[in-house]
Amino acid sequence: MNAGAPLAGHFAPGTLPYRDGHIGIVELGEGPTVGYLHGMLGNPGVHAVLEELAATGHRVVAPSLPGFTGSSEPEGLRTLHDWVVATSEVVDLAGLAGAPLVASSVGAMLALELAAVRPEAFGSMVLVAPFGLWDDSDPVADPFGTTLSVQRAMLTEDTAASAAFFDDPADLPADMVVEHGVHRYLTRTAAAQLIWPLPEWGLAERLHRVRNPVTLVHGAKDRIIPASYLERWAEALPNVAGTHLLDDAGHQADFDQPAEVARIAAAAFA
Image (cartoon, helix red, strand yellow):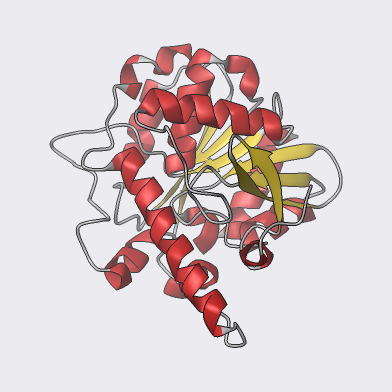
């Protein structure tokens, strides 16, 4: 893996060539390979859930999707189909084909979409609060029609859990502060492209094709996707190995409760 631009040292510390640009990638730990596909917070460096997964005796490989932290701005991603193809390419570039996967939020949605058409892309999957289902009587909240500070509170129950993404290190040079701000903006834009105005692309009609064993995780205090969706996913997927509702965790429970998510993943992949 090649060293990236200076920004990559603070977000994803490595890069891989991708189309006319690059994707950021984080790799750490030793042992059987486990992939991590990020959610709306992207890959803000070597964050806690990656360290906790590595501590369970795994080599963790976490690519950043096009446009998210550490990756170049995407081109040609106009539809959900384009994003699924891009995800498939990223999985291959990162050497994750067939490996077990932890995926969160928008990354979990894309993992399910890819598994529906390419089941060999992953082994067992641990999915944290996937987007993709919709119930008019219990709708998913819009995290983009609000301020950045409110969005931050919607993403994690403990706002300190998302500090690696939202806060700049105190010793960061002024030009890097600007770059961080740009990448935060691009990450939010890429996430919005996937789920705004409604995060419903007909995935429910394709879920019967997802034969991979799936373990579901949801934060009990998720302010974006209600906790009731945990049961909806359990009913919709054909091969659910287990469900876990985590107290004191918001939408990105992998950031709020990284050790518990890693423990669940280690048990699911054993």
